Structures are given as C-alpha cells and as structure tokens.
Length: 201
Image (cartoon, rainbow, N blue to C red):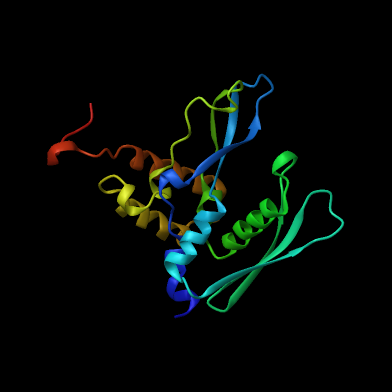
C-alpha cells in the first residue's frame, strides 16, 4: 500500500460533530465573531488509525529558547514524512502536550487531513461574550460533510465542485461567481421525508 492509494480516505471530510469552532476575530463591540473550524488531534489519530493503523508514526523534538512551548513534529505515513512546528497557546493551556497536538495537526494538513477546513467560506456569527461562545454555531456547507451527511443530490454537486477545482479559471472573480452558484444549488437541496418528492415552499 502506498500513500497515493489512501490519499482520498485521508482527505475525506470529518463528521460535523467532530468539527469544532473557535473565534478568530471578535468585533470591538463583542457582538459578532469570525469563527474558524478546527479538529482535535485525536481526530487526526483516529483517521490515521482507520486508514493505515500500522503504517504511521509521530515524533516530536522540543524547540529551545522560545517564549511559548514549541516543538517540531514529524509525521510519517506509509514511509512518507512531513514536518511542521507546533506552538502551545497562551495561559494555562500552554504546555508541551498542547504544542505537540498542534504540531500533529499541522503535519496532518500536509497529508490532506482536515485541509478542506481552510477552504470554508468566512462565517461571521452573533457572539455571546458572557459565555465566550457563539449564539449558535456555524453550519458546515454541503461539500464539507461526509457522504452520509449530505442531502439527496449533494454528492453529485460535490463531484462537480471537485472537477471545477482542477478546471477552474485563474480569474478570482469568476471563481467566486461559480462558487456562489454552486453554493446556491447546494442550499436548495432539502431531505424529503417519507420518500415523497416535493418542492420547498
């Protein structure tokens, strides 16, 4: 088995419940936040265990002389290695363990694990500053969900989007226009209960 044989399985979207959200930017009046999607290091480990359980390893090396705990991680999957730096957050969570988790996730992105989360459209939501959380968490778009969580017909549109990824013109405005239409098409799909076809009111 080679890395190319399992690339699609590594890159597959995670279930919606496995994707967490954190604020990237909060407005000055603390009423809205730009939410960033992320996964936990355990999700990365679970994905690697599911795809190639006996063919991956992760090593860390402490980087000395840094303000925050920092490590260099090396993730090896089926004989291919990727390296990246992991840094712990400020405060009580600033541990070497947190830095190692960050490094694992960063290395995993180089193998395509969770990389699609960087392609999500920007999502500003109402922010509850007292609870330090969004009033309601953002929704993942259709293409960022695994097949079993997509609405009827969604998989076909996702395939079209994958094809466009390789055939998309370089003009950024045209890309945005195409994405807007695809997003609208995805948004128009609704699961129909009882097996009956019908139109949404």
